[in-house]
Image 1: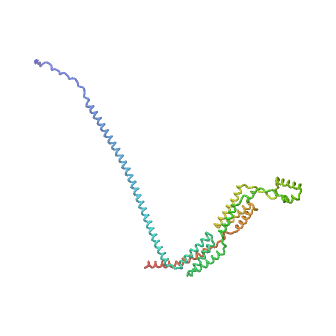
Image 2: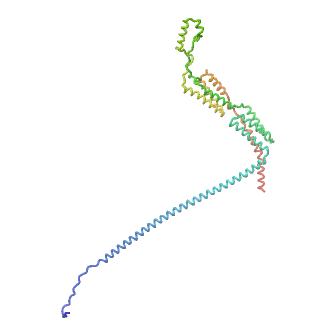
Length: 376
């Protein structure tokens, strides 16, 4: 190792300066990276929190909807329950009313049975007489059956005669007047009238076109006097000239037709018009039959008047069948099928009053007993 000598007087050596080092930037980048990572982590956490909040919001909305639906269902259920309860209450009330009605009906039937057991023969006879009087009024007013009404009233009078109730005297007195009024009426034979009209209608159906005016064939030539003389005498008496002249005249008569124009010439009707005239007359007679069955006198007379007009207008009087039809229709037209009917309801009213008068004392007695029971 070489040894150098040191000289203290020499200037102190100056240390050589070291070269400058470049600045360190990695901490900055590290900080930036850490900041970015922190920002990213914060963003991710915020996004997760936002999603969680959205889920919570949706769940809250679902819970609110579920709660609302539950409340609606609860309200509907309570409404249905209240309606069912109300319906059950109504049914119970109806059943109570039905039970009460049945109870009243049972009580009424029991009273009726009791009263029926207490009724005597007179009560039953009065009830039978009331029924017969009702039948008589119905026969006269609705069916206009004078015979049936008279028979019903006579039967009622015979039943009242068997009773021992002196209170039916006014009823029998009025009943005698009504029976006399029915006997004074002239009974209408509706069945006979209907059958006569039906026979006339059948006769109209058998009429031919020759019975209708204007449907006849033109009249043949009328032979003059002496045109149809027997030929036996002519062959013996007349000469050949006369026979020739007669043959000539016969030939002319076959060629020349002589018609008399004294009467008015009616126009010829077509077959359809002729059939229409007959059918119209048939319908009129059928309408008259219905009027007879219903007892409609005005319609009956009007219909037969139209039938007579049709016979006079469209049918030939020279036909015997038409003349017979006109006579029969005119005769039937004068029949009165709806005579004025008397009032026979007075006796029924009196009998009802008498029956009510017989039942009233029993009712009053029953009411008195019930009142007495309540007082006790």
